[in-house]
Length: 559
Image (cartoon, rainbow, N blue to C red; front, side, top):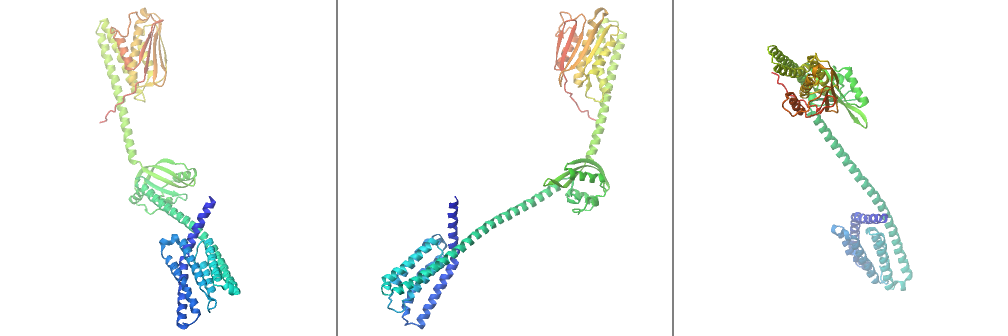
């Protein structure tokens, strides 16, 4: 993996090295071409018959190669083939070296320019063409080989060995110098490439960081604008203070409140004591408590704001940064109208309670009037059966009147203390049959039920107790009647009425319609969604299982 990355890096460097050197290569080749042209024109004008002129003109053999090399630097689509193109062009130069050398005659004056020309070619190879290092060394070796082979074939080695080896030495020396120059240039450019790559990477990282920071700043600015817009859209009065109690933010609603009450509007940066001199020390203590403990406080306060007296619900909310409370937001909600509405509701509720008490009182009185009318009827009537019926009706009415009596005197108008009610009812019935020698024993669990439960249960108890007093102990014999009320669970109850009297006749049945009282008991038990069990051992025992029916409240309009 590391070798692969190294290869890719060297390949990237070679492309960078070659492409980045094109401008300098273009200028160098162009200046060389211009210099040779000027020198040739100079020789033609001033030394037209010079014997060296022939050898010098042979330098123009490589001119097309130089021109092509310059032209390639301007054609970008050819950049991906530059390596191959430069190899071909320099191999053409090697052929030119061989061609010029093989046609050189050492007997002619000016032939000594040949080796100098080859040295310039080698220097040009190493200086101008930024090919891979092994490639450029190999081409240089080919050029020296062409030079050597040409000097062997043109008999320079045979006729003038000193001249041959001397010139070869200078060519190889120039090759070595060119090699060292190319190596140094490549090393320097390699270091520059690595530095530039590192700088580019750091620059990209810096640009990314700058972009991210810019995006973060823009996001923060948008968030802050949205934050301010949100606060401004809230109708409550809001301000934020720092630890020095200097105002940091104030929303539009509070600004409008300042304008309406003659308070300063530009308050950001000012101390709240300066802006709101009416704030109490307790308020500042609450702010400090929120700063110290980081807990939201909710209070209510009646305050004088300008010329107005208002009721405020005040929330002090901590604002954290790095797990530390740095600011506190105070939200003031004007509850003056709500207070008025609450007061009106309280007044209406009190009026409704008074009205309900009055209703229960009047119902109780009306039932008492009915009982009095029935008693008047009894005085003028000697029919025993009719008197018994009227007495039964009177007891049922008394049980209902007792309900309204309890509601009238109770603090809770929709709940009946069932144990107290049954105890009162049993006492009234016992008093009615005061001539009997019967002991009443009660065991009643304290519980509250709705009037929908208490009313039918009272009628049931009235019916069963009355029957026990009437029929369980004939001849006014001694006996005992027990009344038990137990709470079985959250919503279930058991009422037990037992006597140790003579018991029920064999023909007794709740389904019989001959006994109106028992028929009423059956209907009332069904109304309670309960059921009744009857035991006949050692007297009679009625066990009623029932549940507390939910109260069906109805609002009474107040006119």
